[in-house]
Amino acid sequence: MIRRIHHVGIVVSRLAEAYEFYRGALRLPLVREAEVSDQGVRAALLSAGDSEIELLEPTSPESGVARFLHKRGEGLHHVCFEVADVGAALRDFAARRIELIDAAPRAGLAGQIGFLHPKACAGILVELATPAAGAHAPESWLRLKRLVIGVPDPQPTAQLFQRLFDLTELAMNGGPRVMLAVGRGALLIVPTAEVGGATGMVALSLVATDFPALTAALDGAGTRLLKGTGEVTVDPASSHGVHLHISRYE
Ligand code: CO
Image (cartoon, rainbow, N blue to C red; front, side, top):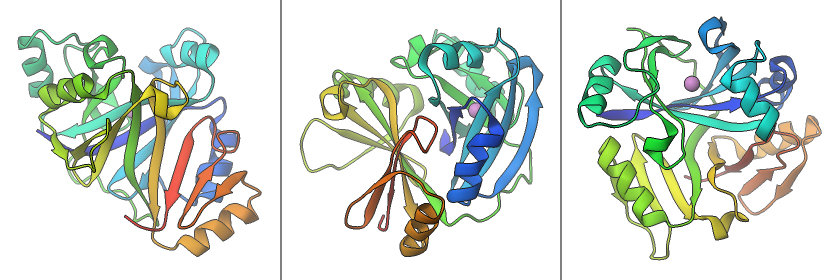
């Protein structure tokens, strides 16, 4: 039922400043930008391979995104899965007595969208979207590979996500982590102890097609990062609250 991670939503204070990093340093192509008045945000979708990154700036102090920003600061806010028919998916969840924010689809930046209640998804805010027919994102040199989720106990959370969204578990080399495939991307569910006690959506992993050019671009933009072999980790101070791992290999 889930085709792919359509996008990962990131709350930022100011879209123009976030563009300096995401469009400037990372060179992610803009798909579209618009005001979504019923959500009290100005939002932008940027292309990241098979998925997109959505930046959200609050435009109204009463919006959920404004409250999130006030309470938690900039950072990862929600994950959106693409489905063929968001209306049918919402009806199916309602019939299964899954708690929803939206009983029926509404217009969003990604097409027709609807949110599940975080209570239904182990505290994660999940959006479903059905893009308009023919919607097409430009090519990007970075591909969103994984969304990392920290929870006290990964197994029951992974089983919940499998039950809700019919996701397939990918083999891991033992240990307490669980990886669930979502199209070509994945959710990596890890114990909070592995991620400094953080819970919820804690990090994003991307793959670069031209890793040397990427590190040069980040250096050129003055991005704060840790360099490893074949991977860089961007300091959340540079990436608007997001722990970002970018690697050379799949
Ligand atoms: Co979204």
